[in-house]
Image (tube, rainbow, N blue to C red; front, side, top):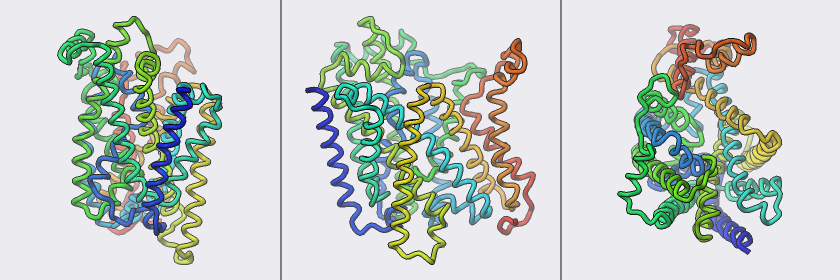
Length: 498
């Protein structure tokens, strides 16, 4: 009965998304799918981007990190905050100056066709891997807590969820997503606040007492001061800033919503307001994580970090709270996937198929082709989720995230080269550089594994004197790309030469 009620709630939730899609996709064209006709209200974009930034994985995993790492994650959040201002006042002016539908067209205007194609290609690869891994992990949670109990197999629940996302994004694109993401962010934040209040009620402690207990348990520690650790504060802060620059400012999914705002000033307001809201929301997730651990400790329960939040909500809180949690989880999942499919469709159509160059195609033909691409990405997402399930190996998921992170290095190097220099590239050198830099970084990261393969007695502590790379690897990757591009470039100011 309870599970059937949850299914009914999800169907009703999806019905609301379809209703929004119906009204926002009227008179939709390919251009409105890509840019929202430059009419998106900036405040809705700012609020809706919270749901896109905080995926279902964040919704489940961040609270679970507090037990072992305290508030160290917030060091990176502070880095995110710095990065959003760089995006707002360095990158957004470029995108509006060139009136871009795809941000990777900037690379063509500044550096030539090869840089443009490789930049777009790295985005498509990285976003496809990242979005499908997030989708897989969250579907696993829903499968465990909802679908298994009503006899729906994993493959069918995957098809149902992807079909839902496809249904409400198929016609409207960005015009629809701006509104659906706003609604879903409301539900996600509602679930977060309700769960915090519910846990506080179960603990029956004052907020001051809760904070003191978290401090006694070493869960409020914020600054990591050991430079050899991956979570050293400056690694997190500087790395977090560059993660924002690349995974927001150089990411078509995140920027597609920003460049759908009517002018640069409003887009910058959106980014600044969003950055302040995200500081507060991430603090709430960390507070929730500490409270969940206190609740588990008080009752003698033990959970794996990623199971802490969903297990306590399902097993030890009222059913109504669990319903709100499921809606919040879905609301965190959908924005991180619907935006990815839409952005990948946009990038593939504009950057790979060359929609903006195709004078031989009328609007009807472009619309039909765009719908075919959109459907193809949905099928690709489904197949990758099935593959991850077949592998059923969490280390594979971690590896995919790591590889996806490396792909943003060349993007960072390409954009930095275009912005910071006036030199020109040789097109034939771009692929070499964009492959070589990530390979060098992979070699540095996995050097100990490589050495122990050839010498089982190798002391891994000798590798880089025990230094552990964190998020600064992204900076190294981008820096290597920049240096290699510079060394193979010319002093000419015109566009790249073949």
